[in-house]
Amino acid sequence: MNALGTHSLGKCKIGPMEIASGLSALRAAADLAKALRDGAKGGSIKADDFAGRIAEVYDYIIDSKEALSSAQEHIAKLRLENERLKTYAFHHSVNWRSLPDGKEDGPFCPTCVSEGVDMRLLLRSVLDQTGASLHLYCPKNHVEGVGREPSYAIPKALIPADRYFLGP
Image (cartoon, rainbow, N blue to C red):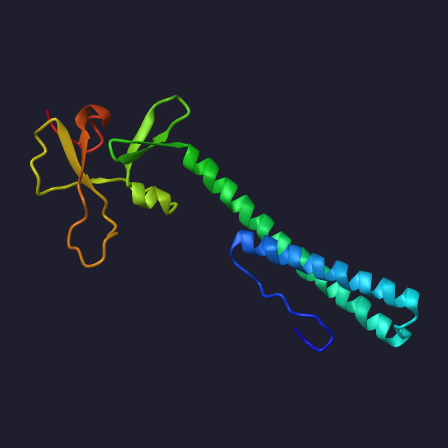
């Protein structure tokens, strides 16, 4: 807060904080406008001081507009991400993309999907794949310091026969 009782609002990258910053700037603008009105009525504000105070009100309004606009962009991105995630189903410990015809495409790594990446799981080559399930893994390393990603055992009946080109 400076000598005139004003303060600078920092830019926040998180939606709710941006909204709080925008509302705070609007509140400061309203308080300053009220003080100006009261000072003008009482004759305690000089004409030279009045113009500077109006500029401060304008600055607060601009800060508010920027913060709320940034929050609006953040909310729009979250809505798009939410819509994207609605196209996925999670079962058998992995993600499956819902197709327009009602079928499912997959399996996809659940960690990658949550990060916005459609990473197909691959066959774990060192395991026996002749049983009722396929043992799959994500090629992206999610666990630092661990040499091997977790395996996902997915029933073969859920995976198209030509997905991993397994013979009869």
